[in-house]
Length: 387
Image (cartoon, rainbow, N blue to C red; front, side, top):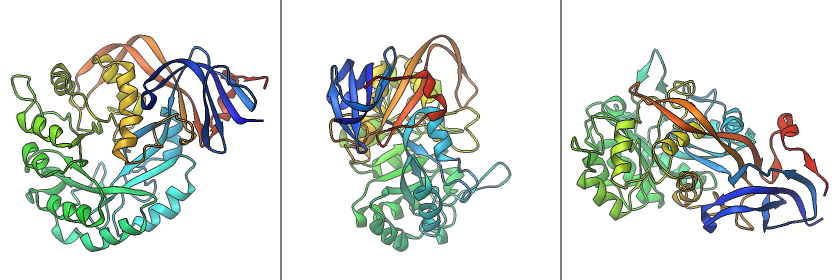
């Protein structure tokens, strides 16, 4: 037979091909092998008519070093729940514990995991309910030489360098940890992802240092260090950074996303480059919950479904410099997410406790991972059709 699996009859949204319409998607040997109407000839056919199929969702900001750090969650469990096929871990591990993350978590995970390597020796090691120690406060923890060596030796999985700056993450060190991380990123020719929380440093100081292709995460955070002015406009430094090629990621998390900020940014036509959950142990039960909940918030704030999907597929793949991710083009990775958009009244909350009652909710209904149906316990919902 020509294909291993065909998904038939769904509304397929694939921004990498400027497509939004009903057709079939086929998979063979872990890759997309067909994209068109009335595809035939497969060992397995799933009728997904009435549902939405997208490229496998990419969550650009997660913490999935389960068991190795206190904030880590189980990647496979999370991915099944929220339709994510690729989790990008952002700095849970540094050069001192990368080997354990790779061997014990990444290589044993069914879902795909990529990573930004932290410039701090032990990554984010002190993030918990009772112990909260910013890993960038002590410059003795910065390990640029080993970070560069390990990033260079693990390019199959490491997509960039991570650093966290701000009062909680780096104390009074200001932009010094960021400068160290930028030197590493420059040395290995990789992008940088920078976390920001309360000042110091300021939002403007941070984005002024970032290069084209570098990522600011927690981009729609509340005051202080919000990208919006008190008058509801976008700060000029933020506009200049985007024009220069700096990328803006949501990274919702426990304390880094506010409806007030998002409304101001969207009202000015400033959409995020990527929507991500920053899911970890302290926010998986709220306020972030998961990737599809974070996406739903932007849908209810006025972004179109197409644009919301684009931020978690095409844009994320381009941010990773891996265009075969986040696409259903023939030859791309054989990952897809099956979604519905529920209508009703849904209560959403941001990190400040503000509630938003939205009338739509994006729900993950199933996943194709590496060309195979990944929900055997729920397969009756999408019965096999005759080949």
